[in-house]
Length: 119
Length: 286
Image (tube, rainbow over all chains, first blue to last red; front, side, top):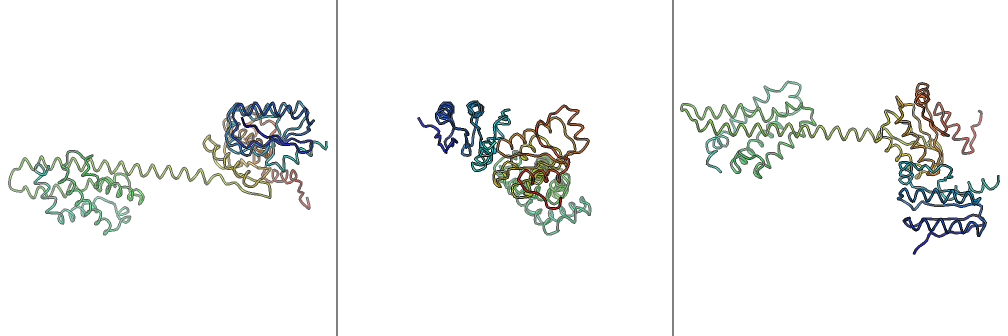
């Protein structure tokens, strides 16, 4: 079974979703990511979903869960590169993901994480 | 199928020239001078001539009982073309239908001339059948005219939707979208998509939604604005709403709509200033 790769860059974890998310993959990502955060004592998590062009309510909830869980584990989470169609779908589903930080692309997401760490 | 319509068809074919002249005279008499200017004489003559020849061909091939028969297709196609061009030229539906209806008068006159002198009951029946077919063709023309108008209206309203949602790049990284007119669900959808697409295309972290041109804000409109702002935030950009007029501010408060932590500014200038500040720019001299 394929899985979403989690890359480590210093104390930041980089998650790039490059395949179509299905339910099991999302659950597995949550498991992998939380394990990885505790193992590497990461301070920041950057999730790039620019290749994701479709979401349903379950995937939407998993994204929110991933962000919330990372925050509890004391890692700042930034969601980057959401496609317009995905954003509209999530809003229509009533999932505006409050409390999740967002950025336009990986570069800006990194800046956001760096700024948050300096404080 | 030739036999029952024998006589009328003969008249239709043999006195084409006479019919054409009478018909054009009747058409010119029926139309006002204003609409007469909309179509030239040679064009009208060509249309009439083609109609007569198509009509006699169809009537002799397929009879006049069933207009949905294959033989009548060329006539209908021709009429549809005439009807569409009339509706584009600005003729009214009745004037368009008149094109077919007015053919009855010269046709009847010619039939009467042929039946002159003897009481011909059979000819009467035949001509009645042909006239009924002409009535149906007239109705068909009106229908097509109506369709052409409806297509025009639909296309115009689509064009209006596109025209009314421009996304402007005010500065490197700052987009503005001036909204003009009432915001309903279908428009908000287009507005939202256009704005989000531009945010991705230009990588702009700040978008200003200017609602100076929105006449009224009700709960539904406010809801739509909130959705747009939420979607913008999800994409990683920030949305500022500007151009809120005093009455609209009062309405929003009266309606009990909470705009939450959305940045709102009274004018586009204020919104632009704050956007520049957020991007780390400052204006010299202020």
